[in-house]
Amino acid sequence: MQRDDHELVDALRAGNANAVEMLIQRYGAWIYRVAARVLGDHRDAEEVTQNVLMTVVRKIGTFKGEAAFSSWIYRIAANAAYDHARARRARVDDVSLDALLPVFDEMGRHVEPVVDWSRDLQDPAVAAEVRVVLEQAIGNLPEDYRVVLVLRDIEDLTTEEVAQALGLTAAAVKSRLHRARLFLRKAFTEWNGRARSGAAPPRASSQRQEGSSCSERLPP
Image 1 (cartoon, one colour):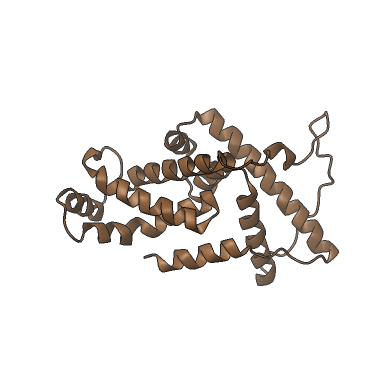
Image 2 (cartoon, rainbow, N blue to C red):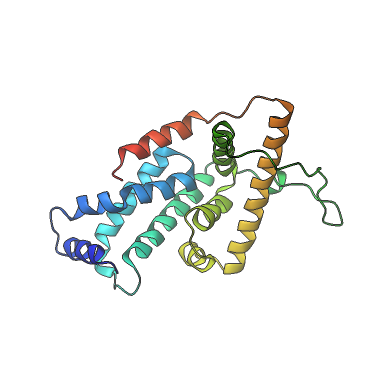
């Protein structure tokens, strides 16, 4: 555990008046980023962030120091975002990923034609479009798949860390990650086709834009 985290843990355990502010400054934006990417909604992400911070303060006595403090917080944040996503999904109908994935024939080959991916991503305008496509595609993933993709590919946790954080087997993590990546591949293939045909580029949703402004208000 890093020295700064040692000091933070000691301060939280001692009930130091400045400890919570230190926790927010160090981990608030990080927790929010994970929650926002998993949930795709800035209000839900704010709620989860507040809950995670309170949980860390309340349960600091259970932290044994066997793993990094950041890893302990990460597990709390990932579980909180995942639980919130499942609770939200229970209130609404979720989209089946099978309806969104690329189509294959009986031989396992793509039914849809393979497109040319040689567009120049050094072009700032193209790069901006790619960012929007990526954000929208991740936002459209069913939450069971989105949380795995976010933690594994964006936050760069290992398969084992994702499995531990979400209470899944490593095989389940790999399966969900593979299907999520296929969905993103399809989204980019469709975008590439639209771009080459001269169709209007996708636009970021207002929800995403609000989420970005919210994250900027949190401490770095």
